[in-house]
Amino acid sequence: MLGYQLLKYLIVNDNLTSKEMEVVINQFNHKLFSSGYYLFCVEARENEENKYKHLIYLKNIEGNDVFIISKENKDFLLKNELRKRKVGISKEHSGIGELKIAYLEAKLARRFAFISGRNKVEYSETEIKDINLYEITQPLENEHLAQLIGTEKLEEALNTLEKAVEAVKAG
Image (cartoon, rainbow, N blue to C red; front, side, top):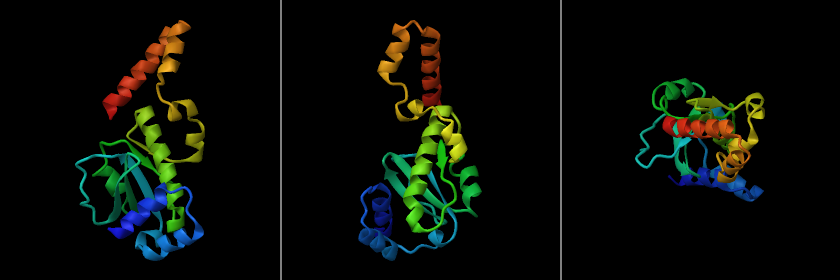
């Protein structure tokens, strides 16, 4: 469990010194990091248990449950355990030094999955580049909605509300 706490520390800490990074790398040696892995982000659930033997599971990091899984087991997890959830998937990575980048990719992809109503989104620079950044960073702000209504853009306001309702329904 101490190793998993170190991984959480690595993911959330923006100001890691090279000495701290070295300690994390030396303390946590897992075979997943020597071969290719993917990182998945899903919305954190209170009742989620660590029942997974073939992956690393990190509970509730910034509102996300995180799964780190080998490329060989990626499709199995998506088709079984996570098939009904909104999943953000990083690009393939290797080495513990890429863990923070993998987390940020998966976190952004999960946000896009939620907003777009898709069950899974794999991070790719071309897809993410086309995202309306306003929708990702500040979904359905009250001021934006009030502006639409105030400028009599009622159809656009209605469409925005309908998208938000659908996203909430989808989970």
